[in-house]
Length: 169
Image 1 (tube, rainbow, N blue to C red):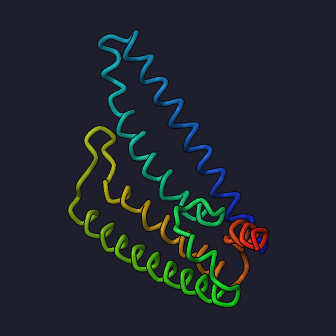
Image 2: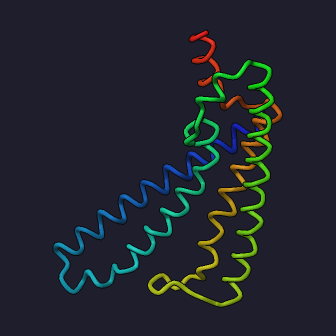
């Protein structure tokens, strides 16, 4: 799955660049406030930009977090089931997660369209706010991709859990 490798690389690169940009901007904003006086008012846009960047950071990381098994889950019952029943349950979980993520992404597209039609713009950045609402669309799309890959066996996001269960038995 060379395509998945490039998707992961793009996600990680984007997330690292975004996080570093957030740190630099916020650090610069703090310095400007401390030593800038009235000059600091020219940087009022930074707080809003960092807030919007944080939204993208969270949603774009959804797929990577799922793939690495970092999402919160209750696995007590799941891990105690017999292997064949557990395998069926994991498929049901992946299918349900896929359809739910697709549904949320579809709702997000409608929300983006609606907010863009209102013409609402951010106060300090003066960008259409509708574009900020594209973060959940992209994030849930990437999440749906990971659920589908897990369902069809291209990735095994439950390996950590299965190895622990087999070690206990």
